[in-house]
Image 1 (cartoon, rainbow, N blue to C red):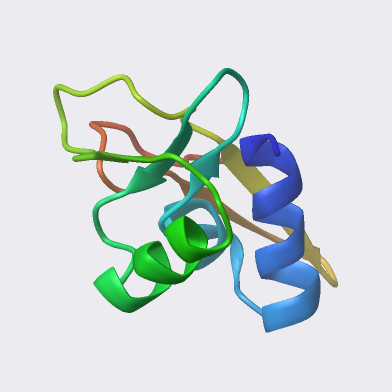
Image 2: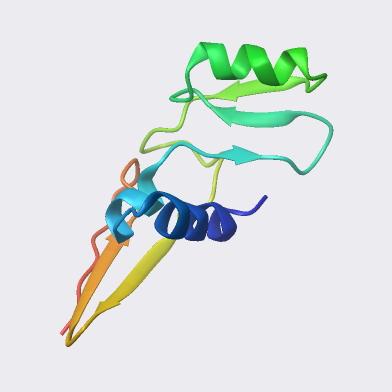
Length: 95
């Protein structure tokens, strides 16, 4: 599941604004192991393992490149709201 899909789900299903939607912990499921952000609770990771997933916990910080760095723009009437993945150095600007 891509970061774009997860960001859209966060915005549509959970009502997140662009900053929160891009900054939630993510998973990455290409390859043999399920890469899971360390910010996802241990109970959830254990549940994934119980379902048969080989869970590979990844620490996502400013230097890590385990997951994509999505950006988002939300049109809110005449206003634009932006967000970028919060564990990286970046800023959402508009004019």
